Image (cartoon, rainbow, N blue to C red):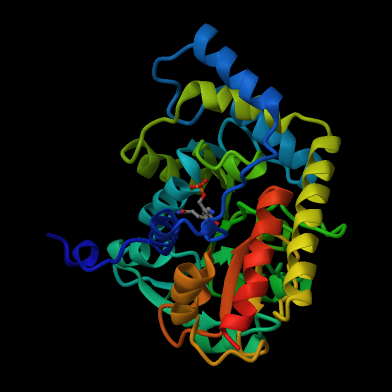
Length: 385
Ligand code: PMP
Ligand code: GLN
């Protein structure tokens, strides 16, 4: 057996969802919405399933979807992509990440990774033979500094893995941070794999800034998106990679032997969805922002100190600031078993020197679920003293 996988624990999301099922606790761990997906997108998928084509679609993705992705980014982010040569559709952002890492990382290449990082990144980088170079962000600001970048970049740096907006911190990198990172990437002739699955889930009038739009980055960025995130349909697993033709050609080679294609009916429905008017996107953000505020104010009233959430489905409780001495793993375990609420310990997103005082909660839930969780969190506050 490959020791990398033989020694890998089950992902924290699966583990905590299992704990929720075992204990009957309310699951605010794994990030998935329990309402709010667009009915017309489901209907488009149903139509494409019963009336459409159900055989292998083109390897790069159905033309309709690639065109819709190009149009969508032109409209929402002022990025100009050639749908025929710069887009590959994948089975979720997870496959896009795997394909990008396999296609671009050779054994011995240094791969700069920013902690906390989504848990899928590190095993894939290691499997590709990459040498991880870790940058560590800290609460409450989670900011990227010039000093950290200068220490991490070396002449062997080939790839940077970026996640923006960032899961689990719910922060967005500022334009200054992105410009700074871009300067280092260009100076080192590196490439950024930019996981932007949360690009539409941003709040309070904020706009997502794709690093591809920074000077010098158009030819050295792989921009990754996820239809599941944009339409609150996380089970759908329709993702994509956007990159200059020189990169996209190689990405497609990796994709063709990972999954080759993605279900054509779901692709058709996402193509339809990406063309929805601005209304859908602003309403979706406003609805999530309302849920965020409901959970945040309820937690604060119950005596929990929360960290701000600028985007994603998540907001965090700062255990140290809340006067809790337990580490995040012990806290989440006890909270599930005695407090009947499941959350995610943020230390799971670190490979070394973890931050152990922050716990992530998902607010993409109905008001009734949030209120029931808040009732339990108020009781749990007494449990933890
Ligand atoms: N990257 C990040 C940062 C994520 O949060 C997620 C899922 N929550 C993914 C990738 C995976 O996306 P998908 O479900 O499209 O594979
Ligand atoms: N990305 C989701 C989260 O952060 C979970 C995805 C998964 O379960 N792999 O909660």
